Image (cartoon, rainbow, N blue to C red):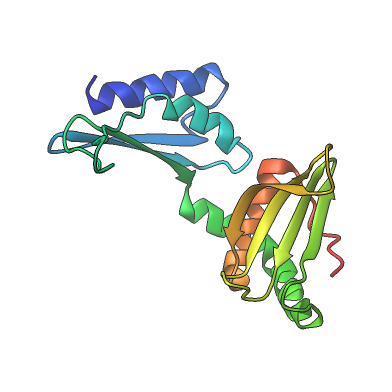
Length: 183
């Protein structure tokens, strides 16, 4: 299939799941011998996992068995991400919350985590201090077999902008409420 046909198939799969072109855009590009399909989520309430499941099944990348390098030609790369302009607009809603969280980070030790929100078995934690990695927000699930939390997603949150973007994604994707954050 050529890139345009793959993009059309992805659109059809998304439509079967009730996702319209107003919510998600699909663009096809061809580079020499490879194809690239960019899928951008314009409505943050649309499940990224659902969109990835519909799109990623068309991805095909050939690897060299010996060197593990990507072989040139015949590859179809699929990227799924949020539309940056929309994400920035939605992140504005969480800017004040992010600012309050960052103001309180001095109360926490280097290896302490802030609990930002909970919903069912989901917990959102923020590691505000550099501890071998950049500050980040983690979405975790309580593990029923142990006291350990399973890390589902992680977002870099070095500053107010990164933190507000992470809060926007988690709020819209999982319905988490950050308006009652007590840090």
